[in-house]
Every structure is written in C-alpha cells, then in structure tokens.
Length: 69
Image (cartoon, rainbow, N blue to C red; front, side, top):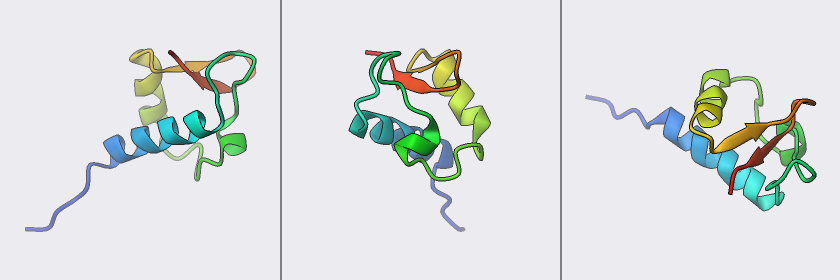
C-alpha cells in the first residue's frame, strides 16, 4: 500500500511559514501569495478557505493575506 502525504496539512504549514517569513501579521503588512513566494497560489483554494474559516488567515479587501495573531 502506498503512502500519500497529507497534502492539506503540508500546504497549510507552507502558507503559514511563508507569511511568517514575510512578517505578514497585520493588514498593513499583508502580502499576496505571490509576494510571499507561495508556489501555485491559486492551486489550493479550498485549503486557503479552510485557513480563513479557522481564523488563522485573514484576507484583505485587496486580496492580500496575513496571519491572525
């Protein structure tokens, strides 16, 4: 039986790591996924939405993101 890594968990950690590295912790310091260096920023929209629903990730009006403290 093949092992499949938990892609959603890996992706969530990747997004959090990239935004943390950019110090995106407020609306003023928010970044687009491209600015943060996130590969394939639109490839996993359901994971992005899950982070927003869990209040881990905040989306601004101009489609930038920052981490909720």
